[in-house]
Image (cartoon, rainbow over all chains, first blue to last red; front, top):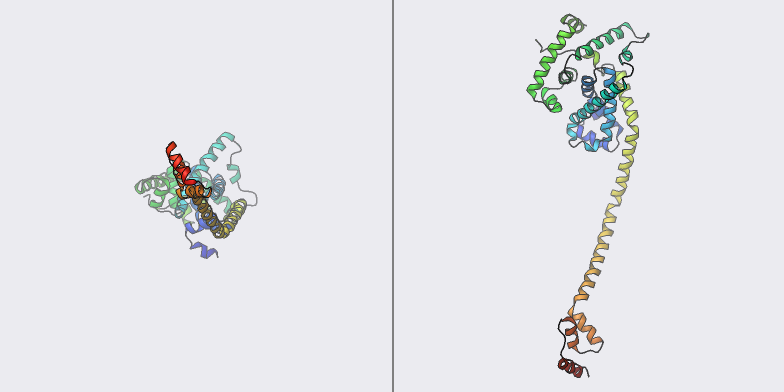
Length: 190
Length: 119
């Protein structure tokens, strides 16, 4: 059933979700979670906040599904919602100035050494991403984490394909400098 | 030099399937209420759709009957034949019906001729 749905286009899934199909909605979430997460992470700066924003954005999208005028381009529409929610979330955080979320990423005593390494690596990546501007972050995450092509990225971000390539080039160069070639090579060889 | 993809695997929320399932389930749980509301709304729309044809047929018949009655009434009010028929039914001369429909006032001579016809 899930495999069958995987082959169904976004437009059909949106139509089913509008009628309250939980299975169709879940397929949309699974299909577009990583893209939503990439944009949320680019704007929030850390994975925990990005997950909260994604959850919020998917619920918002479901509530406003009738506003999605081109269901075949659901992803681009969803990313606009993610971006709005991320901006709201950041403003809320700024006002609230609560406990820094870095603590949430700290490993618990039960975490294995591998988990610890992974969390450390994640923090390094988050710190390196923080050096980029928001558009560079969105482009590099959508391209290298989600695997989108430049045309789709340009379409979603409202920039040309060429600009997307430029952003990716600069983002990668900055990231390599921040992370240090050595650390990156070490990680890639794992 | 910057052509090589950056490996964001440690940030990828889907690499740990159990954790990803958890994230998806959390969204599904929070979406459950909205999904139920949508199902109910679509069921209601379905009910209306089932009644749509008979309701449309009834509305069409009602509109046709109303239109016919209205048309008949309006036609009766402006009809010259009706005025003549009423005049005849009341035993009045045919010329009276013409005066009633016309804007002019009959002369005394015309009245005398008409009354003479009536008798």
